[in-house]
Image (cartoon, rainbow, N blue to C red; front, side):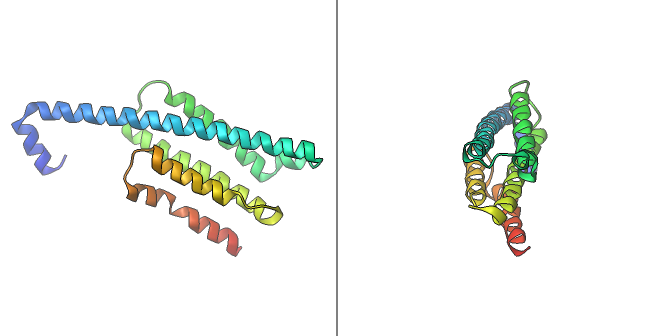
Length: 168
């Protein structure tokens, strides 16, 4: 509370209850949106993972390198963690701090997977990871209720990571 909010709460006892109800409602919305984002990201990641392997099978380039390279391992971990988080967020309500931590963790998990993919694509082929990273950043900004400055702070390492990969 700010000092002004505390003085208002003393004058009107119902204001504290209304504030708690508002906070609980905002947390439910955040949890619902995180569940949506993790679910959509999990499905999209799984589709990209399967398509990559199908292209390898039908293109005649499939082999152990597609299963055990850094991108495939990072992608498989990302898909598994997203599904676990999606299922966990369907259960009971979580505290606000935990939900914000999940928000940042999911974003960095997706961004990290895109960065590993970008390193792989930088050497071998078309660079689609930057586009996916941009879509993921915009999706986070649209779906997750937060201030614009929070989205800026969370997504700021992305261009720095791309620059580091380009300069290496």
